[in-house]
Image 1 (cartoon, helix red, strand yellow):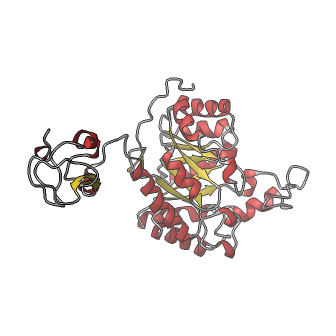
Image 2 (cartoon, one colour):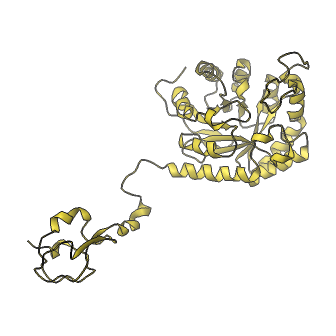
Image 3 (cartoon, one colour):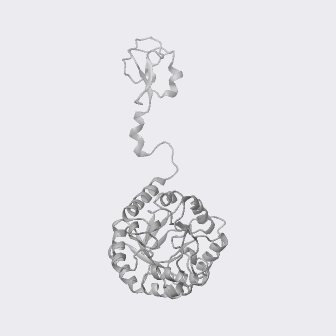
Length: 359
């Protein structure tokens, strides 16, 4: 059920790595079908993701037959003229984008050897069992599969953390998915805000949903981002995203089914760096300056003698000035010293103190 009390989500462990607001954002490089059916390219992508600092790579586990039917009837061909895949049949698209099952173990092992976690999105119940046999550290439910309740139940039953993209799901659909996962024994749930257009426009990204997801469901939250660049992803950290998933490609000009909205290696590296900086910058509510700022306080302003002042001489604008540094009386005392008399000789450049101020 929806968490009306806004419970704080606990830290989740995935493959020995803590996921939560008290740790650096977990960056996932989604390979999708950008390998263009080349295992050599897929391995090169895994290596580039590791060199870019990604914490995990993710595959998609399906076949064209497990996704759709090999027909070209209406509804089985992409008709939207603004789609990257306009005119393609669903079956031919999934044939082109699928990652062969026989690659999975090799790519997972290669990623682990490079210090990354590796897992996948299963798109049917048999794929859940296949991935479980490969000992993946978690499962990811894609946004279009969030309403596949039997699939969620199956994945949740394996006793591993479950990441779910919310995509175009309504609040009630998300509630059903989360409730299904929990009833199946999974309490380690991460919900990703996702806009299921390819590419997505920043204006449709609605990052303000992220803290609402956390409060509504008491889950850890993040962003599955299909916008260009890294701006939306970095901004999401300020709203509580602890997981960021971005599609990845070696070269956008080199092809790949998702290349148009995927990050290249140098962009992925920038995302890892800047999302960590954003997380570090959040800090806590604090006024009065940090310890690191203490030395800087000397460069505030204070009251100084702007020329030599004789004993008994009235103090005023003609012989005092508010300047940097801050070793004299604070500017707030200006009205209290004006027209008072100097208690003794004050040399130009002297920081004014109360002992210099008479009646």
